[in-house]
Length: 398
Image (cartoon, rainbow, N blue to C red; front, side, top):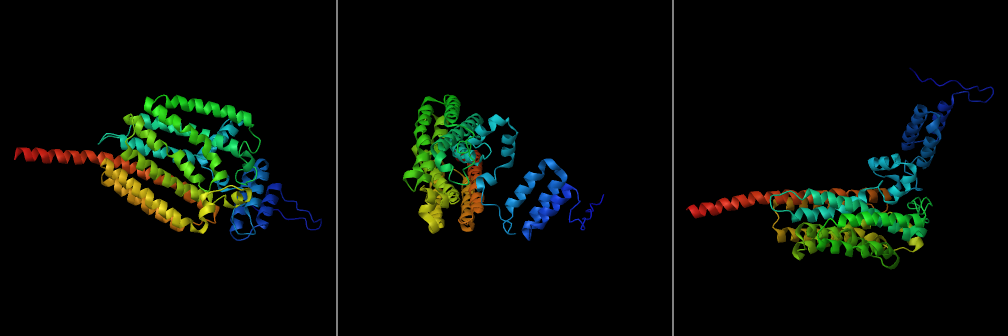
C-alpha cells in the first residue's frame, strides 16, 4: 500500500490532509541534518500510534532538536534521560501509587545497586575455600541486602537534599522534590526498608550483625558531606564498600585484616574514580547552589587524580592477591581492569554529561571482571594443590 499525501487546497489556503499526515509533515519541516532522523522517527510513530501517542511523540521530537545539531535537550540530566530500560519498564508497569516509591529507591536505575553489591561479591568470593565456588546463599542474601540498603540510602539522601534537588534540573523530578511523596511518607518508607534490611542482617553471625549495624552511621551521614567538604566521594566510598568487610566476616566469622583492609581500600579508590566522573554531570549546578564535590576540586586535573586512584586501587588488589595466594586468572583480571580504567580515563570528556554517564555505568563491567577473576583464580588453586600433592608423593616414593 503506497502512502501518497493528499493535495492541499491552495485556493482556500487550507491543508485538507488527514491529521496524521499533517503531524508527520510538521515534524519533518523543523528538522535538518541529524535532527531530520529524529523527526522522521517521531513522524512515523505518530502515523502508527494514532491520536493517543501523537502529542507526546511530537513533544519529545521538539525537545530533542537543538537547531539541527541532534543533541538531547538540557532540560533532563543523564540519569533521568538514560535509565536502564528493563528496570524502567518494570517500574513503569507497577501500580501507579507504588511507582514514586520504586523511583525513590532508584529501582529504575540499578547501576547504584550493582556498585554497592559488587564489593560484597569480591569479599565472599575471596572467602571461599580453595577450589570451591562462592557461597551462593551468601551472594543472594547480600544481593537482597544491597537492594534494600541502596534504596534506604537514596531515601535518606533525598530527604536531606529535597530543597537542593528542586534547584537542579537532573534531580528536580525526584519523588520528594517533585511532591509525589511527602517527607512523612518517605520517613515511614525508610523505616520499612531498614526493617527488612535488619531481617537480612540477622541471618548472619553475631560478629557480622555488629559490623553491619556499625555502617548505619555512615549511611545516614554521607549525604551531608557534600555540604561541608570537597571529598563527599570519599564518604561515599567508606559507605559503599562496607560489604568488602562484611562479606568476608559473614563467611569466616571474623575479618582478616591482611585481606579485608586492602580490599576495602581498593573499593574506596574505585568509588573515588567512578563517583568523581559522576559528579562532573552536576558540577555547574553544584557550584551555583553551594554544594561541593571532587569534580569541583579537581577541575581540569581530574584525569591525573583518577590515574592516581587507579594505581592505588590496582596496587591494593594486588596486595590482596599476594596475601591470600591468588593465582593467574586473578592477576589476568586485574590487568584487564587496568586496561579498562586506562581507556575510560583517557577517553573521558568531563565537559559532556552524556559521556560521564557512559563512563560511570561502565564500572559495573569492572566490578564483574574482578569477581570473575576471583572465582576463576580460586578454582585454579585446586589444580595447583593437586600438582603440589603429586610432587610431594613423587618425592616420598623416590
